[in-house]
Length: 239
Image 1 (cartoon, rainbow, N blue to C red):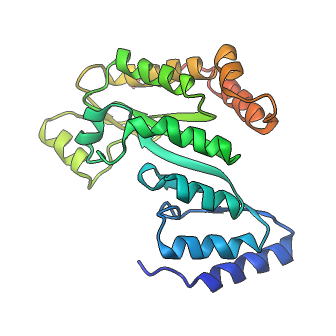
Image 2: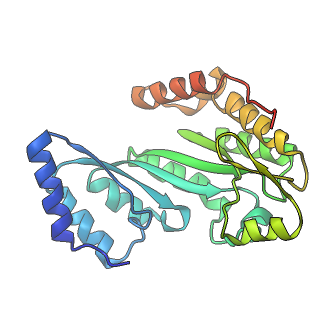
């Protein structure tokens, strides 16, 4: 793709601020924290706009330097894709560069910079079991992660994973919401949905929230309480 000129980005933000009084922005570029010259030039320009902004980021780009530079330019929210804390799963989906050992340090750095970090984890890979998935939940609680979204693995047409499952006759259809139903290796498909429910129930339990959320971060507390409310309903496991 062709990156937009940085001055054009700044101009658009200034126009939006002027016309709407909006001061909170979200960048959809998941490479924003890649840490190259262009990223740091953008962060320098954003400083003078005095805005709050957030973005999504691949975990591999979340270095201490890039996090600090982003925070100094107004970043207060990052949604980070971890996918799994299981190294076998990461190798399976060609994401060995996502080192699970770095997650705790990334969480700490974001907290020190007052960035709300939202972590995304997927269940349903071939090396997932109920036991090691719940161990992941406990690790994230112990790391005092601000918020986590637990996802059901959804193989997409055209991806190597989808092709592999098709070759192995493990594709079973579609849910009413369009998710691909497949046969996991170590559990039933319904078990993944139940696992996500149990993971949310544990992660957003009262004792977990009290342990993870700083008393002076009412914004994060409110977010956790909302997630707690939204994840109380048991999943529909009749496919």
